Image (tube, rainbow, N blue to C red; front, side):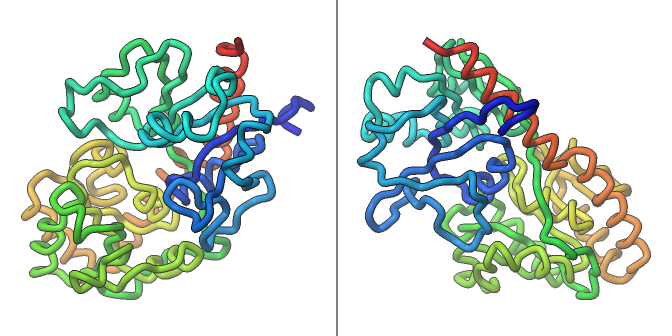
Length: 323
């Protein structure tokens, strides 16, 4: 049951970003995710190591047309362009709908029209920066800031005199996620890299989700080398644990990290190396920034606020766009 006895909605969505889906399930609704044989991208259901809650249900994709939903939640361009026509009936495609945009525009940072240009589709941006940069056309928009949960009992210790970067796919995603930035900094400061494919460039490989928080808590700081993407959940989670954050002052990062309070951000990579070195040699400074990071995370990335925001968005879409 939702608030004050209000029934939860049945929301069809896809498994696109596992961690985001996990946090999304904090909202008081039932989320239904389709699966296909072999569990290809988007159809993974409850796969992976995350502790999926009971309100996330999987079902065979070919059964979708015979099921009842209150709302369709799209999470990728493929969901919008292909999947809805593949598994949903025409009647289901006219149901109340939401599209959550996880990324900033790629083609042009200022002049890209969002592929969803529909006054009957609620377009949710995950950062104010994304909302600012996308041309959202006629779609009504709202921003739902990230919300995260940290594994029970995990707190910052910082005993390793090293930095840690958490980036998936750095070998093939290249400059956008700052491969060159990371490799440049690594020449001057000891920094480890974890994430999908990281072992290809000397990283430690992928750390399972349920082990990641405790793994990074031992490092002195988190370095985010990414040039251009949404505010990563890895940054939000690291701040919640209490890691000081060092990163590029691009996209949403300047609103997230306050220099000298919770870490340091700059567009000049050379200016980031000195505070990294200082943190490695001054545990007291690291602990001070750790306190600032965790305080900010509690204010901005609270999971209860995130769940309430998504509850509001889903109920608004169902009420406003019902045929």
